[in-house]
Length: 303
Ligand SMILES: [Fe+2]
Image (tube, rainbow, N blue to C red; front, top):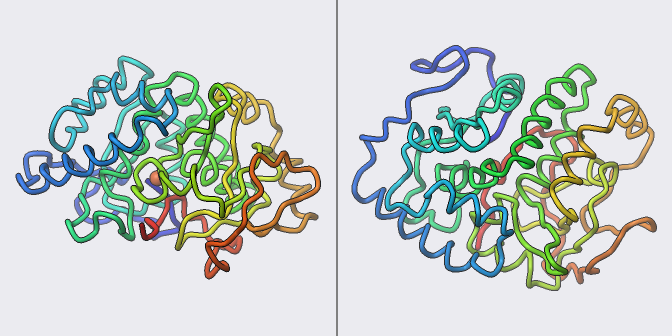
């Protein structure tokens, strides 16, 4: 799910923390069947592509059970493994609300499911993106701590006016991150995991750069919201990601970033650990965050 500088009051029917009931009993048979179709197609494709951490989470949470998961049931399992819960929200939530949920180990998820004609593309993150894409990683104790640390960092970033910079960390890890496992690149970012097209593109296509993770570099790098990414950042493991996030004093980092140029996602810099130099053949950028958006979820690029 995501945050946005939306209005400050929750919409009608939502609680003060913007949560709403999932209303699981209201899903139609056709919606459950569409979930099963999405699940089967993507689980098959990810078998050799997804991080073992994501795969383990999928299994531990028994997400292969047919039908759209019931958030209460899912939260019970998640709570037992890492103390996280999944809560439904009606759509975009304000940044402060988003960060407060993460800092308290509550993952906010959309409860609607895309329509059959949106199987490969949709504007807003739906229950498939949020649950299939994000939730398996929350069953991992290290990644679970990382997302909480991100939420806490997000709360602090608001005081520095540095949200757009920090949001890039979320984008290039939680949404579009790759990890190195036994010398191979694997997917763990939910925006890739939940996209049939990008879960091939991110690993196989010669176009995008694949660069070793560096916190400062990531926070300088713009991203595109209308198509597959032009660069992916690769973490060596999740403990490194968590340690870096916990042990960095972000205030001086934000101050230093103020004096540095932003980096186009097609660019490579002298200090980069380049794992794959992309051809960038996929085409010129047509839209990016341009440092102005705090949107924290992919718009679901076309397959
Ligand atoms: Fe997401």
